[in-house]
Structure formats: C-alpha cells, structure tokens
Image: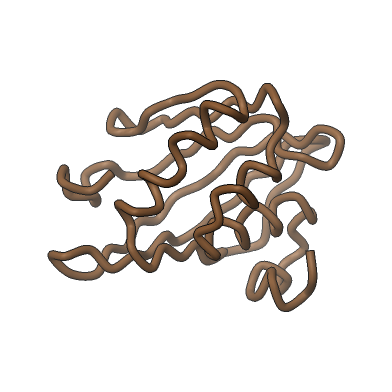
Length: 135
C-alpha cells in the first residue's frame, strides 16, 4: 500500500498488512478491506455488542452495513504496536459522526498475520461507548 494511503499508520512500525487493513477501513472500501484478510479469516469481538464472523466472504458481506452504520469512520493508531511472532496488538481510536453526534471509541485489535494477510482479528472495545442504534 502506498505511503499516502496508510497516512498516520506509517508513523509507527505497524506491519504492512495492518496498515493496509486500517487504510482500507478508513477509505470505507469493503472490497479493499476484504482483500486484506485470508479466506478463512476469523473476526471476533470481546465486547458483548460485537458480532463475530468466520470467512472472508461472510466478513465482506457484512462490511457495507458496518461502514454505513459509522459515517466518516476513522481508525487512528494510539501507540506503537506490540508484536510477538505473527501476532500484533494494535491500539486504536475509532471515530465516526453519528446522527446523535461524534463517536469516539478506544480499542485494541489483536491480529494474527499469515502470508501477508490478516488471518484473525480479536477486537477489544467498550460497547457502552456505542449507541445501540449504531451498527
């Protein structure tokens, strides 16, 4: 992914697959997001409000609804990653502009990278910060 596409994600030493994934989410491009994950991608949420999915096709199918629920979605890194082998902890701030006003949610992705793609993402975030009407 080009330097300009990754933006602030290039300010820290994030692995290229993480920076590309964040840039695709920030661009609200479901095809580009799905292209960043493996065929057997696992998307898990530690928050009770999150909905898990398995497989690139299932994840891709849900992306338009997620992106529509969070207008002006933006993920910004909050600190450098912590890496251990193929696993990377990614601290982020998610912002969006909801009808009721701005949204700010701090969270952490724990991603597993395989063959240059994201194979698993466990997302830890505060579901209390997101109105029930969103997502």
